[in-house]
Image (cartoon, rainbow, N blue to C red; front, side, top):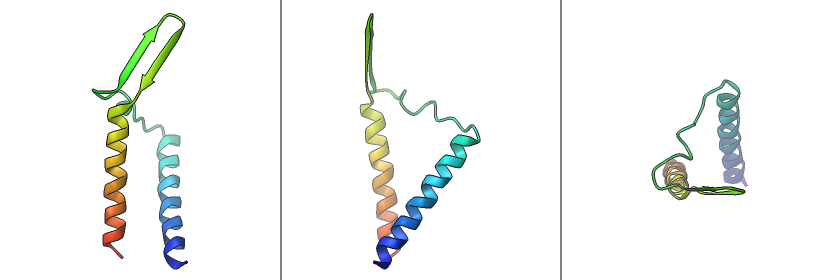
Length: 72
């Protein structure tokens, strides 16, 4: 249970930091507009498939988990 508590604390700080950054006006406008993200806009509808953004987020989350696991 100690490990779960530590994990929840770390995620809580990460979420709080993201909230503070967004509240302060820090913009991540490049996220979601990467090469490889598919955007189809036609009259009446639009489709957006963020393939590259999902891969990038997955890599970052994997690195964070690897670092957390290595620090134990």
